[in-house]
Length: 241
Image 1 (spheres, rainbow, N blue to C red):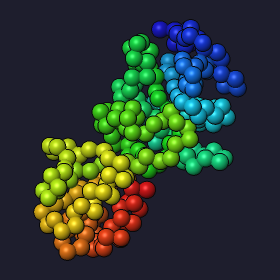
Image 2 (image 1 turned 120 degrees about the horizontal axis):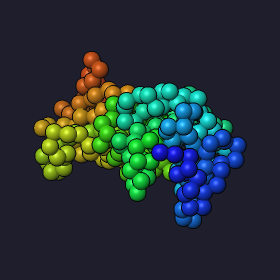
Image 3 (image 1 turned 90 degrees about the vertical axis):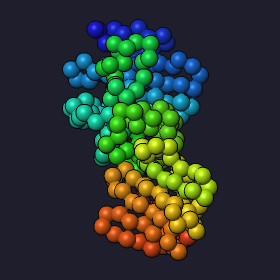
């Protein structure tokens, strides 16, 4: 497959100024899509922007990944964070990378999709590196909003919980991703419910169990914490950052 020929034949495509073997195109108003070949010309790095295109930032992301492409392509984890990225005026501290088996960036061209690695500027709090392919796909397609280059962090918050008083809880044995606001909401509802619980995993792959025992009690990493209502909210926010 001639990847360069495929990319250069896309509608409205043009070479990306300042980056070799790279292209830019806009399939709809507000959308800017970019793609760059790897050094061996066998893989593609793809970056998207929606209503937030910043040419200098995008070029910096592409160049950063090219400098780390052995790691970006070679590591088997579906979703990883490449640390050490920064850009003036932005708070991004990593570049995220998702493997072809966990995305549908080119859904109409399976051959091309199989060689494309999605990339995006991100935050270290968003990615654990142990996401399954399904979890990576969910994070990338639904939760991270990676095409919004002006976005704030969307921390990795994986929970399993049950609250018999409210009837709320996760279904089955598998945990689920929730927003920080949802986490804090469910923690508050534990108050006074002795047989309720919430298990929490963060991007550092720490696991915590939270229960109510007259106060909020959190167990994890060989520690036991006892907290008031105000303290548990501050604690939970710090755990996921």
